[in-house]
Length: 159
Image (cartoon, rainbow, N blue to C red; front, side, top):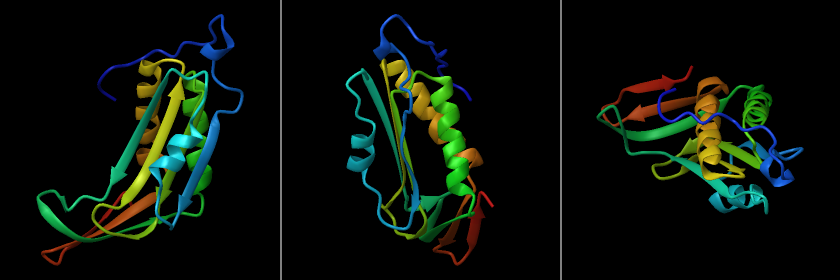
């Protein structure tokens, strides 16, 4: 991973500077539309000074070709793998609260495909933890994207 690396800071003097005992607040893979408000509310924590949120949306093109349709499917173990990823991020950073939801099924351009958020005592930690969460989710959770392009071609991503 390139970019800024923040070394996690294990417990400082004040309890609010440490990770929460159980920071994983919301994890789901669902067929229904996602809500940024739901995810943001799930990571609210009075001891958090920084909250980072990432929203992945279905775009109208990929690789220079217009996308007509898109569908996500997930392996039955996907939620368990999502939990493993979330718990690893929570163990590596002083996470106060963490949430991640991913959509499956048929989506249209503009739909929310994934929403993740992390709150930490400080913004740099929140940014780094959120980036790790989305990067590891995309790299390891068995969710596959099937795209149909306007030129009649199609492609599986992540399969």
